Each structure stands twice: as C-alpha cells, then as structure tokens.
Length: 259
Ligand code: APR
Image 1 (spheres, helix red, strand yellow):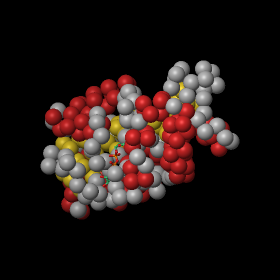
Image 2 (image 1 turned 90 degrees about the vertical axis):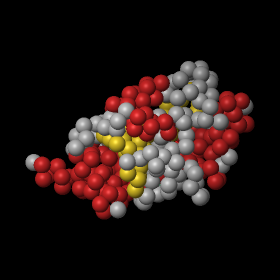
Image 3 (image 1 turned 180 degrees about the vertical axis):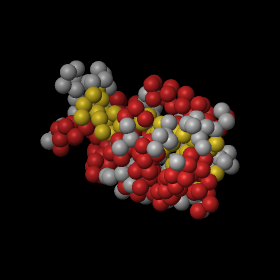
C-alpha cells in the first residue's frame, strides 16, 4: 500500500485538474454510518420510507420521515471532519483540487475548510431544510427545534407547504447546477479520485466513467471492492483517513522537493 500511496501522490502533483468524488465511507471515521455496510442506514431503515413520493403522499409518512431524518441528523450535527476530510481541504490549500463532487449531506467538507465554490453537493445537504412548495430554505437546527417542540411534520411559515431536509431523496429531481457542473468537471479533469463510495447510485456513479472516458486517471480508495475496480488505474482497499493522510504527506514532500 505504501507504493500505491506514493504513486497516487505523484499523480496528484503532476495533474492539472484533480477531482475528488466522495461517498458515505469518507465520513464513517467521523462516526456517521454509511448506507450499505453491515449496520449501515439501510440495515436500520427501509429505503422505500425515504422515497420522495411517499414523503409528499401523506402527513403520516412525513412524520415518519422526520423521525428517521432526525435520528440521522443528530450524530451528523456533532460530527467532526476526520483526517480524510482534512487532507482534501489541504489539497485545496496547496492548489491541487479542482472540486469535490460529494454524495454526502453531512456538511463535513465545509467544516474541514474547503471553500463553498469547490463543493458540489449532488445529494443536497442535511444542514438546511427546504419548503417543497415555495422552495424557501431554512436553517436545519431552527426547524429541528420546532420538531423537538412537537411539530412532527413542520410546515413553511410563508406558504404552508411541507418542509423537508434539503437532501435529495430517491425519486426526487437532482439539483440542476450541481449535476451539470459535476459532469463538466468530471469530463475535464485529468485525475479522478473516488473515496468511500460503493458506486451503485445513479446518476452520481456515472461520474467516474465520464472522467475515465475523457482520458482521466481513475483512483478508487474504498474499504470494500466496487464494481468499478477493474476500470480504475489504481484501487486501494482500506480506511480513507490514514490513506488520505499518507497521500497528503507525500504530496507535500513532492511539492517541497520541486521548490
Ligand atoms: N474508508 C474507506 N471506505 C469506507 C470506509 C472507510 N472508513 N467506511 C466505509 N467505506 C466504504 C464501504 O466499503 C462502502 O463500499 O464506503 C462505501 C459506502 O458505500 P454506501 O454505503 O453505498 O454509500 P454511498 O456510495 O455514498 O451511497 C450513495 O446512496 O443511499 C444513497 O443518497 C445515499 O448518497 C447516498 C448514495
């Protein structure tokens, strides 16, 4: 693995446009469970209860949704970036990051210090709430306080529409700007690094292929094998935190050597 880490660091140093693609595996070392590993979110909840159509269908299903969303939000609110998040923030400071395409809704890239314009939240964010009717946005914690005070399916103060955490649920339309920009940057990059994703959810999972088809090198850092491993130029199976910390250390060494 040491050789692989040194190799990826060299690729980063010699690349012009490095895109990082993040999944839930990036945040497990911050105490947030992923979705498809044993003990993950989909072990505890039925994904169908999260379908957008269900949410819009009835007050009862919205209350159920908010109950589950609250159980997921509380650990996220307290979570801190881990060494993998911090390494990505350092890559930005070193001028070696084009953008982060993230499936994560936990806001940890922001907490780690990456700048807003570099973060493309493909699946939205759990740190805000949106009205499903007038699209007004609210701070999550303020609405969560209303939930704690008994509003089990909060409504918009302006139009009375149902409020929902600003995450993209199955069956909900993808965010236009973030999706469009993610495709553009995936096709324009020369190095695409996947960190902590099973790469099974579309359209996000098509981004690594877009990058590869446009000539980029593809690196996959994931604890378990993925169906894209054979397509990748490098796969490193292990914990994202120590691997990304090792890659950053080598990038700094290489850049230092170049000065
Ligand atoms: N380091 C590296 N990889 C890890 C770590 C870790 N510390 N912890 C978990 N993993 C890997 C697992 O092996 C798994 O393959 O991260 C992957 C996480 O995969 P999923 O749980 O499927 O998460 P993700 O790919 O982000 O899911 C995509 O699915 O449910 C929806 O909207 C949700 O954004 C999510 C999307």
